Image (tube, rainbow, N blue to C red; front, side, top):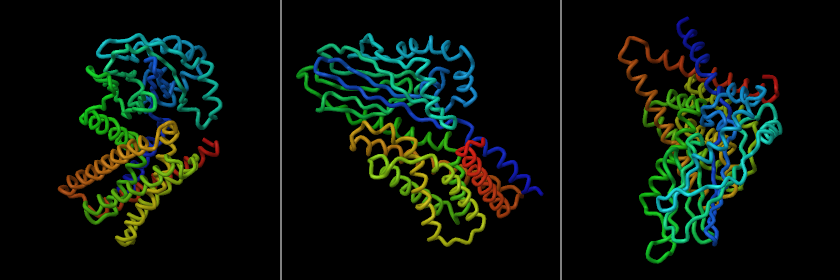
Length: 388
């Protein structure tokens, strides 16, 4: 009876977290500096979450619905936020703040129309472009770009014609540096190595990490199943690495155009892999070799889900930049997976010091993951069918 209550409680607590927020996507920016020193920016981000003043991953469906459907709420919010965007989108040339001109910010009617075109099931996020430009002084050596904090991490590609570009992940409250010349020669100068390392570690790794913790609760469930079905911590970590290799393959293939875009059908399939992972860990009959093939196969499926979230924002980027972003993203995901496995291991180690029997507890947790996975699958199927 105790374990039945544990399973029920676990399912009730975990399942809502897996679909409590709309599918969110990071912001991206393309900036081009032309021969007349005019810097043009195209920033693509989720407009409704910005209008409510929250990060896309933190804005709830209810808050977004209140904004979009309460009469007068959207126009009222819209009246304030474009000015806030201009105020918080800061461009500096050698430390001096420049005047930014907003060329286009989607109107309230355009935002609502775009949401309606996406359909009832996919009305959020509403990713739209804001265009801005700024005139850079001719003798500028370094440009700093600071985005509004509500955009979160912004994948940024700053270019100077066809000769020079910098790819970075600009995190909130931290400017992205674009070195465009040398004080003595006026020639293009590459960013110092430590600036690239900072952008890679803090931005790209952080974004991959955030896709699992705190946003990817379904991903965390799968990692829990991998750990519970392993004979040791080392075995669990090896399965996590194999899983990462699997999802890296399909994610990269879609992002580089070798595979077509993924539809929403992938979401219930991902939930199915969670249910199967928990069930196989509960049964405990698979061999170690089989339990290495299973994470690789399931990783291929999860990679398609990641691709649906990130590939559409990489279409304007060159292949070298895409590979760089994906390497950082996948490493961030792997770090988050390791964190989940270590956290579960720590909790079970602490519980082992009590009188609670370990084997029944682990089996109960495996069964809980299986029930949660199959439950999420059913919910997502019903959601695709328009029933919920």
